[in-house]
Image (cartoon, rainbow, N blue to C red; front, side, top):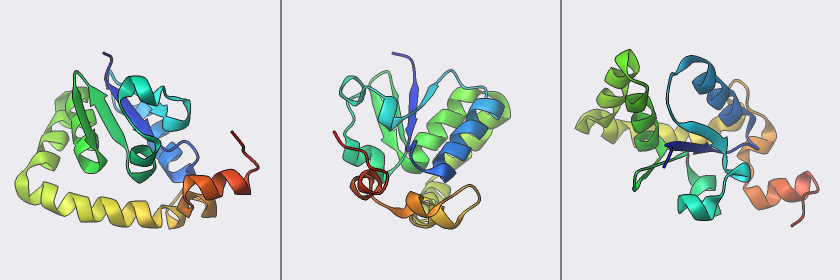
Length: 131
């Protein structure tokens, strides 16, 4: 299975970060918004994808900063060092609260919009999406 990094495509901040990954980080992973991913094939739920970014590869499934660490590790060279550092005990311990804070405040960060702070169901109503 091709490594896959899944993010929230309805969030401008997340999309800006994904575009940075695609331009600057030489990963083998497919970087895709969860809204366009086959979540069943990846073994992911919509709830998991709304909660945090996801990494799926070779039976490994991680989320949040752990997913980011594996994405960086996959990229090799200096990125691999950054990914390894993110997996170290004390750094990893601090990474989760930092990730949660960023996720909770992404609508205030560069590239973010007010819609970034809403759960998917509310975004769907706001933008007139229906199933």
